Image 1 (cartoon, rainbow, N blue to C red):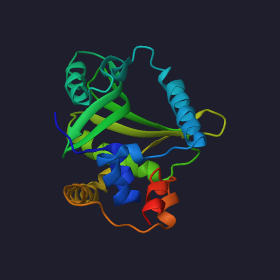
Image 2 (cartoon, one colour):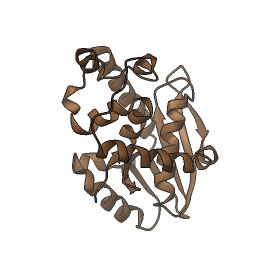
Image 3 (tube, rainbow, N blue to C red):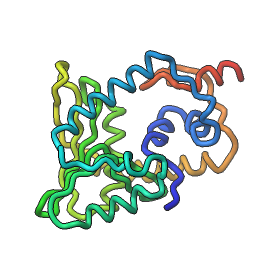
Length: 215
């Protein structure tokens, strides 16, 4: 199955359309300092601590690796099974956007809860944008979608859980427009974007060194 954007690239584009373009066409230019890589590892560890609550869960990334086009196919097969199903890194594509969801829990009655896990201590705007684009994609792929949870750190490595399903629905129209704009960006030349405050918000841009050299 083909796709143009991923969830992470959508979030990148919200910060900077040049960064989005480079993420797609020249990702080798990205530079992540050691402290950022350490945060990535901490985030994965925090995510794993929540997944431990689902010992029956199946991690699709361990089965498929980088075969991204196969994630939606295997996800559909597993969710079509009778009874309870828990998937980690379940894949969905809609509107040319690929999303891998942290935890998808289908209950015995067919209703589905989704969990996005972030190692932050508040429901930051960037996390809510993450949830919203996921909900936009998954709501067009799943019947029975119920709760759409954000889980973040309570400050003591425990979990705060908030349902962002309704807030996400309200953003669907805006998300569709943004996706259409990003597709146009990716069909053209590299955008010219000046270095400014957005280079560090909400994350330090991994392409800043490239932009500084180009400037």
